Length: 512
Ligand SMILES: *Cc1c(COP(=O)(O)O)cnc(C)c1O
Image 1: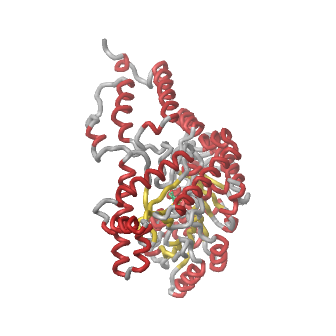
Image 2: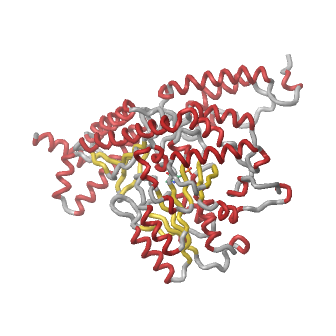
Image 3: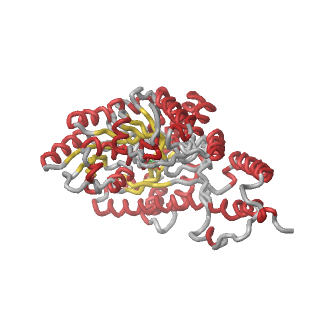
């Protein structure tokens, strides 16, 4: 019998859509109930997934059941499970139930939120839900928001507006013949700031990296001195990109002092609060964003720590007209009436997804209190892990823990004693061994599939980094990650690859 789909044009049969759709929702509910049935990081090699799938597209229609079978048997085993309660790498994120359902409805409506009239409710809901988010973060009413795909795009758009404000002719003439523009960010700023500079013709050399203090925060005096020096050299300082919650250690730049420097020299202040800004939803942590009333723009990521499925990043600007001056370019076919928001004027995208729907559903489903309670718990878990690390003499924390991300390494206690009396060269050799030890440690726990952690380097040292932020992570999950690390650490310390560690362990035992 021939497949009826070959005779028919148009979309999927609706009874089939309903049947498969129900099956997918059932699958999703089972999956979300137990993402920990899967290894958090898959045991596969590059090319494994592609190698098992047809290299050429199907000529004939295929049954959805066959597609779903491949999804379960080939795609799933190659997935890193960000929904897993023991996903603690990078910054964890969450696809919450209301967020997933919001994505489904948005995909269903498939509106393009470029102009108010291309879907009035979508534009108005975006304005509304960003006002709600602003209120929950206790930011001032002078800020206006737009949803972007990622913080990287949002920061780029903000820096473009800063550039346009400083030198309005660039829009017309480009960068040629301009004085060299200067953008300031700390050594700990996210790479997206430098990428924005690359994209906007400011160049990597146009980004001046300001030193940080021992707690990895920008030193405002060093910022002031750098601006003065650059002015003296004939450069054109225009923008400071400060960070609330840096990616390595979640340090917070001193925003009020940075605001003063920006005011003195007429610089645009952009605040990258992609991860940590959300902590301000918790009333007792509102001061995280203190000083931001002096910022010109600010980015926070609901897709990081507000349980919103990828992607959803929010750019707030103080003066939407300055943003629109940088970007508005309205061809005849897009000219419209009246005093409405046309979000295509707020950035580089014309076509925009209806991301406000999922965010609105999330805020309504959990409420401000529910969201705050969950973030508060993540903050508590971060402090709890920091305490466990501090209480264990074989481990050391390598940065303060202002939020729910903990940076630390294994450093056997006996080795610490040896290091104290060692000369510079011996210390350096032990440091290198500790780097290798901690790298091996991370590799081993990640290979186990039980946890997934990532790393950074702080003061040149290999640092294990545990970032707690998924809605499904609880104290049991954090404890298991810690126990995995300790067990793997004990095993590795006995390994001959780590001579100093095993020797110091023997000596330690001899002494006791
Ligand atoms: C995660 C992060 C970014 C990048 O966010 P995307 O939305 O993935 O582009 C930028 N800055 C900081 C501080 C971050 O933590």
